[in-house]
Amino acid sequence: MEFEEVVQLKRNVPFLSDLTVEEIQDLLRVARVRIYRESQVLFKEGEAADGMYVLLKGDAKVEKRLQQGDQLVLSKLKAGDVVGEMGLLEYEPRSATVRAVTPCTTLFLESAAFDEMRRRYHPAAMKVLKRLCAILAARASRLEEIITDFYDKPERSLDFMEKRYLKFVGHPGLES
Image (cartoon, rainbow, N blue to C red; front, side):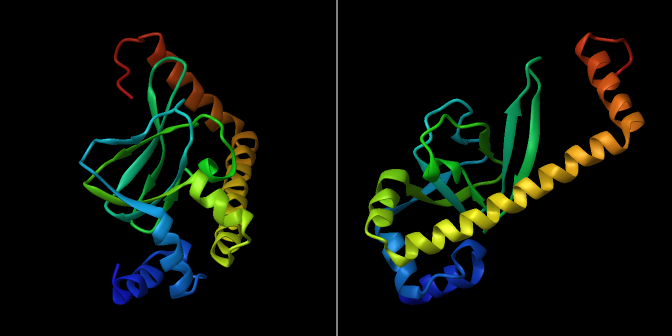
């Protein structure tokens, strides 16, 4: 990747903003660009996690299959977002499916390559870990808000669960 393209990445991808241009170039040496068509799956729930994706172009969604078979959209992703970050931190199965909503270009950072950078205390790896901690802390905070909202407004929560149950059992006239 040319110097100007790396500078653009630094500007346009918040995840990379703390890294120097040289550190980004070092990451790019071990990362791979992956391109996905609309509706193509980046990774599936239950698959072995083997790395993290930075969405460079396009939109994607994170889906979770519920017990009754429905797909729940957990979040929508846009260029600059990071997904699958737990794949850099632990070798557990993927907890959700990520699907391209529009054609997507991603930067894939493989766990093994990142582990090697981390073992060498490479500054880029340390900054990536710091950024991942911030992302995970923000997600934990958002989850806490959702749980608090669920318990603070029991009528709304119960109404929502009743509608889902009625849909699940096939209650006539209930579309959503």
